[in-house]
Each structure stands twice: as structure tokens, then as C-alpha cells.
Amino acid sequence: MTSIFGWMADNAGCAWYRLLLPLGELRRQGVDTRWGPELKEKDWEVDILIGQRVCLPGPTGIWQRLAKHKGKRPLLVIELDDDLLNVDRANRASEFYDNPYAKANLISNLQVADLVTVSTEPLAEAMRRYNPNVVVLPNCIPSQMLSWQPGCYSDRFTIGWQGSPTHDADWAAAADPVRRWFNRAKKAGLQVEMHTYGAVPETFPQVTPHRHTKWNPDIARYYPSLDWHVALAPLAPSIFNNSKSDLRVLEAGMLGFPVVGSNVVAYHDSIKHGANGFLVSQPSDWGKHLQALAQDPDLRQRMAQAGREFAATRTVEANAHRWLEAYGAV
Image 1 (tube, rainbow, N blue to C red):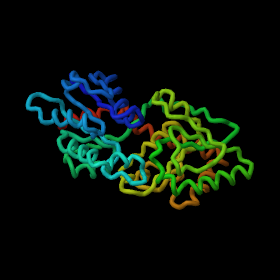
Image 2 (cartoon, rainbow, N blue to C red):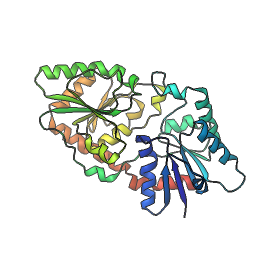
Image 3 (cartoon, one colour):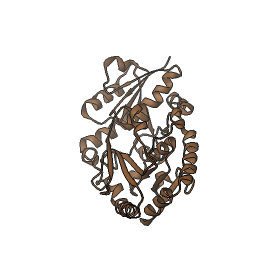
Image 4 (tube, rainbow, N blue to C red):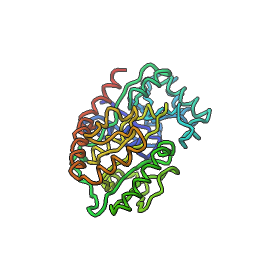
């Protein structure tokens, strides 16, 4: 039986979607899979070792030693969900990934890997400069959440966003038009609130009422705590964001939220304008689309259904075999 170990770099969404979900489903299907943040010596003996964005000095030393080992060793797979070699300066993660050792380590580890797995084709194209063997494994969702009904408040219109503090550039252009619409809506008598989850970027619109929920790595609690009517997905045009996945749209669709998102590469194929959400091409579109959704519950319901139909095409249960096929093809 094939044995696989997923070496996690974090306990956040990246590990959940890129390691825990697919490896958990493969385990359910009979494959010997394990995962964790620590790589112990017994884990060196697996058939396939997946390293999530390996670039720290200690893990890099282990990775390079395994790659040079002359005897039996695991198939080495680097897993990436972002173009960490082109992080925008406005992104707080650049403070780490612009560090020469981190960038050099990541490139070196990419070069010796037997396989690189990524979430999008633009990201695959960027990584092929360092390793020709790159496979796209798109982000997937658990099918059981497709029937979940969000616990939205009936006495207010809740606008939601979740993410890390690294989205300052993404909110820089969207914050002002969202804030202006929010304040206009309140003056017109609409009961409206903002609910953020995870972190609040410095550029996020200053609006009240604003409810905030801190990040909880327990995904079983994370999904049900999203009680929105509409999800926002601002994304600034940049080289880094061109490699982004449509996970924000996929997750919103899974949970039954219409999405209002930037008209950028990452969302072109996922947000069907007027069907499961709206694409924003100019600043005034944020308010226009939020207004349409706020005053039309039937429109929100139709978009929720279309979003779930889209998300149903990307369940982990139906796609986990692609992970095994990618490893087996090496």
C-alpha cells in the first residue's frame, strides 16, 4: 500500500485545503496517509513526502539531504498555493519571502523535488522555471458542506469577508467605495453590518456596525460561524495575484453566498457575472452590486443556488484521485 506524509507549514486554510482535505479523503478511500507540522525520522520512510512551501533552514536541510540520498527515499513533492517568489511589497508576507535565504532555499528545494503541485495554471507556469514537472491540482471542497444552510440574521443584511492581514493592497482600492455604500445604506434605513473573520487588514473600510471573529483553526467551527448574506472578494491586479486560486469564490459558493469580486484573472472563470455573483470592473460597481443584492432576496437565492452548482463540480470526494494520479505519473 502506498504511504504518504503531508508535512504542514501551518494550521491555516492552506494546509486544510492543500493537505488535510485531499489526504483525508484518500485515507477514507484506503490509502495510508498521515500529516503533521513535524517530520520525524519514521516519516522519512514513506513512499511519498509532500512538503508545504519548504524554505526554512532546518526543513531545507532535511529536504536537501533526502534529495541527495543514494538509497531508497520518498518521492519528494513540493506543494505551493501561492507564487512566493513574487510576493507584492505591499503584502506583509513579503517581509519573510523577500529574505534572500528564504527565496534561495525555496528555489533550491523546488529544483531537487521530484514533483511540484500547485493550485492554478498561472502558478504552474511560474514554477516551471525551476522544475519542469509541475501538476495543477485545483482546490476542492468537502461535499457535505453543499447542503449546509447559513444562519443569516433575518433583521439585517450582513456583508462578509475572511482572510489574513496580508490583503492590504487588495482592500486599498475597494475600501472607499464599500464604505461609502455602507454609510449611504444606513442613512437610507437599511439594517446592514460587516462581519469579518480571521484578521482585519489596515486598509479595510472603517464601518460600523462591524462584528469580528478571530481565526479558529478548527474548520468544523469555522464554516458554521460564517453567517453572511454576501461575500466580498477584492483582489488587486499584480503578478502575485495572477497566480491566485478562486478559493474565495469556491468557498462562498459552497456555503451559499453570492460573491462580489474584482474582475481579475483569478476570478474570470469562477464568478459568472449575474449568475453566482458580480464582477467589479470599476470602483462604483461595489456599491451598485451590493445595493442590488441588499434589496433583492430572490436574487441572492438564485445566486446561492448557482454558486453551489459551481462548487459541486469541485468536491474533494470526486477529485482526490487526481492527487494519486499526479504522484503515480512521476
